[in-house]
Image (cartoon, rainbow, N blue to C red; front, side, top):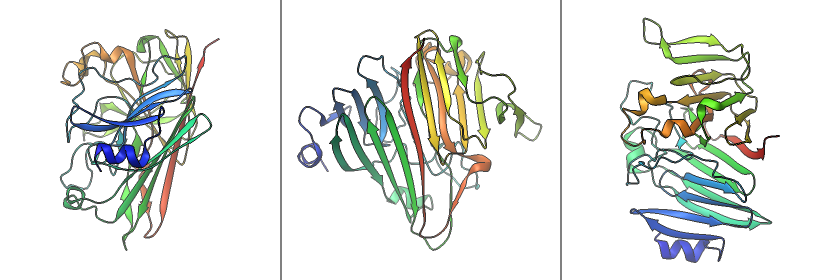
Length: 305
């Protein structure tokens, strides 16, 4: 569907408009409650800003906005595997959902909240990777609170094994002054500390809150609690509530890895912190034929005081 058709079918005057930017189609949201931007490639939310607040999501100034290239920042949708593919077959890092073109399916304004739905179906690219009988629906509720709901359906006659994540890049004033509450006593895999066989070491986080002091890549298993990001430099608190998600991932590349990333500005790591709602690793899902699964996350922002 081209830009004109999208605006004809789904556009809402003064609230929702579709445009092309750098060759990619995107939806631009402006309501009294919040502003947002969603790219159809990857169903990628790159901007969400409640009225009167600073942007809540980090977006790299050096991100590649190109067909087939992942966007650095915002909320990449990760499916059907997290990280490298585990079954010995070829496939892009973090799966194909974040670089596939999604279909725009629904838009409606209810009060101050704009409700959007995008869908992903099998394509030649996904079939070549062995995924031909799935459906994904991604519902966004954009207002003073951000709601994200990812539903996966299995239309095959065999079980569908998959991982998923809402790989959210939160904007913080200075990650060295930020802290995360809600992960205390949680077991995690430290992907920065590997055993001799290359597997991540399992550890327990005893201290609360978590404050980062270097490159961090932690996969918290059986983690179902809400997390609170204390953005001390910005004087605000970001709360992430979730359901039907049993994995929480915390990531920051710090200066060391950022220097190797072509799509991140050198100082970008200082202003971002990934806290991801996921089902990954030991918490990967097995979906029976004809069934579906929905993972939800909700983000709210308030002034610290």
